[in-house]
Length: 227
Image (cartoon, rainbow, N blue to C red; front, side):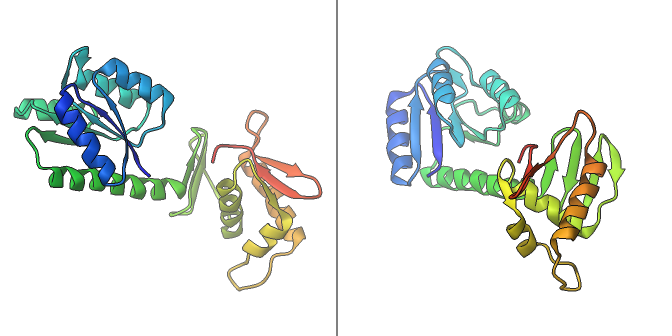
């Protein structure tokens, strides 16, 4: 269930939106001002922020800008500020959509669905990319860089890396590796081949300050970087 935070000071509108969105299957948190909204954001993980432009304790545009510097939380403005300049300001501060009052609930539903669809596609794309600021691996293009320098990895090494990274902080057993890693000719990869590729990856990826692959003796290997 997607979680939505609504920050709207109009009591009747807030109640109506909350009721309607809950009926659509969303979990909705409502706040009447920015202070209440910030408290909810600190306590709950929400998936979308519906934000008024003018609120009793501050400017919605400034709030959006501040939020976007901290996290990539989708934001849709619901506001009476209908000038083109206001809309441009909204998008410039990081808004994902901008809806002026009064608005159709049917249109709002579609706009929300569109934002969530974009989020799904974005997450899918991120799954195919590892980037910790030092090591970058693009599994779609099969390219890799370490500290900005290009790395040459074999297809088997890419497959092994993808398996380890997808299970970051978990022990990837030798049995699982042997089940997942096949070469392009359809031949089974044995334990010796796995060990050789692990050692080669360590030499290519690691140095004294960057350690990525941990051997779990008798079990398998563990990716120590971020997922």
